Image (cartoon, rainbow, N blue to C red):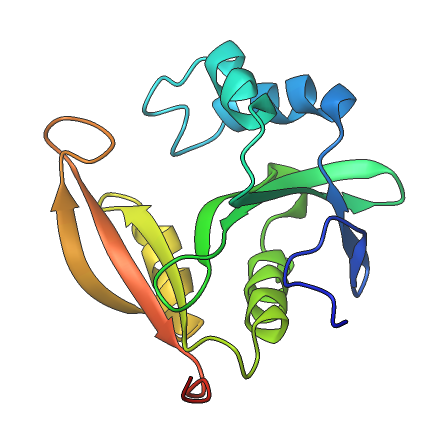
Length: 169
């Protein structure tokens, strides 16, 4: 039997690896996420974020991004989704930014569903122009604004990256 996409195991991505989320790592991840945008700007409390990460969810595949045991970020992927996985959350901590980690994670996601799915999906806050530009450079197209989805008065931008067509069922 072939391994399912996003299996809860270590996934090497060059100099870093995705590690299934460990309960002991959740407080550090949530605290560090709460200190950076978009979560800082949205005033998301670390405790609430930790609770959300800790809740078991069979559709959410959660990993810490690590190098030599140091946690450099966090990623949560929802799969199945609309004919492809949805990047539910990604946080690259400041010391690891601008090193191509988001690209590696997204390319890994595409590889996990190669030949099976035809899309990668994500949402990005409208004011987060740096992230929007990064995702556009990684092949994502802005599909639609989703007003008031996360916070009143702001929109999330639903984005899609088309993959090679999945085989007909």
